[in-house]
Image 1: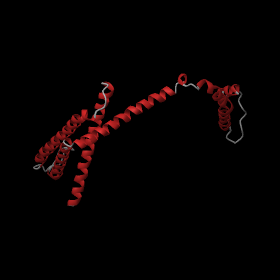
Image 2 (image 1 turned 120 degrees about the vertical axis):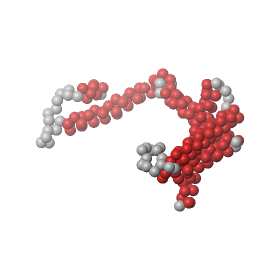
Image 3 (image 1 turned 90 degrees about the vertical axis):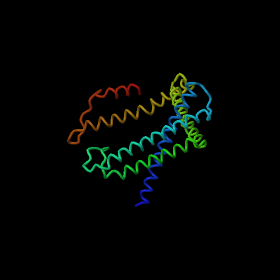
Length: 214
């Protein structure tokens, strides 16, 4: 039982640290984009060390505040034995879990403060944030280029290939479409007894247009 509790605590702390790291990378990514794109400055990892440290310390303070709030809730719940009226209306039976949550929050806060003083850890977060920023920029550039490439006036071979495309449409695609529509119309015209109803002249305007194109 004790071992299971250790595993759960370790997993919860690891998840908390993972979420904190992800939040730090996101904050750094946004600052890098603003610094480079909006302000036009070159990327310098040292410029963001202070930002990374500040973000980790802010998250550590939030974890400590959560631990303090949990401690107050635990103390208030010790002498409550009635039924709970809501999710956060704790009772005596919740004291053990609240104490565990407090320890987990303090553990996360301690780890974050240690990472905030670890230069290598800060540089790793900055490098990951830089990669995320570049991925976002390159994705936007690729999307813009694809949109631009789709414009006929920017395609040097558009006019030269236009005749070939139109011929393929006329000789291949339109006959296939016309045959398909005739097949569908024939199936829809079958009577209940399985006999075929007499054709209706010019019943399908699309088919007429296809005939004219051929």
